Length: 402
Image (cartoon, rainbow, N blue to C red; front, side, top):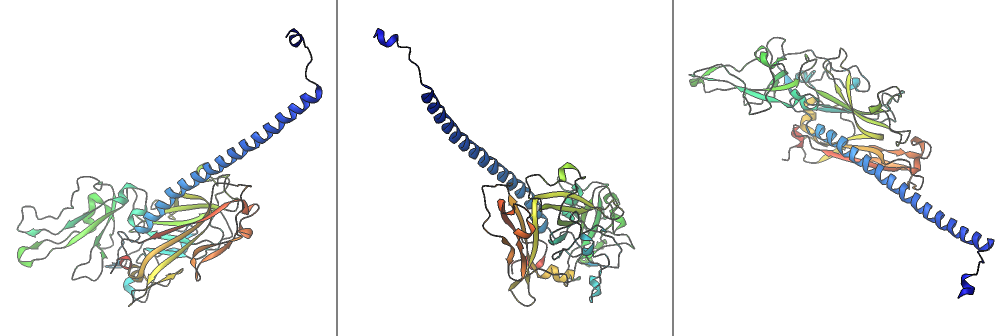
């Protein structure tokens, strides 16, 4: 026992080197595993963040598509003058000077319209030949007035107070200063909705709605009644047009723009941002008030399910520019939007399996994007995906099941 306790023999240099090598190997294996875990978690976190932002932005787009045509006039009781936008890329979608063979449709706004594969030399305007979409509806604006409406009906004599007054809701009533328009709905005597005007006046503050028009007062023997709908359009700005409009397009923000609209570092450098541009009533040129909806976007394709006249069948169409406002209202059953983007950021441990991806439903509509051409360096190290939105506009007759 004492011999063992007095043994002062230590480890040899070889033994220490062997032990150190073992530790180095173990630490190396552990560190590599730790790095893989961290990298994977970071990738999953970025994917989750992009999915969440995608859901929020695309739900805004879906809601706007479903409201296409809300509060729009179907015809005008007399010609009116209004202005839309001079901003690219949506200036080519203006209807304020549009004329048709059926002159009752002249200058009537189309509920939805798009430019197929818009080409721009400036990526800060639009890029990659993606589609540009315009939706017209009172509710696509971001102001509170655009979500409000009421109605006014004729009074029938005898009555204590024969003057027609707008209906008052329990909440969310139009404010006195809200800019409004007035539309007469379909009746047995009128084939279409009409924007009601007194002379050249088609808009007023809600407190002065009588400048636009009021239903006539009838006596009991006439057995008549009229109803007008009053729509809020803007909260505090004189109207440039009797409706709101929002355009949807992809562009690459300039480096000098505000940080909240810049392209994030996690995005493929050859992608951009999907914007919702609300056409302003305040600007002299109807400039966009932009809201970024989705980042890291390479392409957007718009396809319409169109119900052919005299048939219950639908066909997919990428271009409806030849249709009149009435034909769009009667024939468009669904609006399909396909958006090419990627989840998360650059992941060198991942390889995308194909150099091409189809953005759209198939032959004749949408397009095939060559990622190896448009995706830049390391295009294969991104998780590319196509979001698909299918919306059935609630205010278009074509979307109503029959």
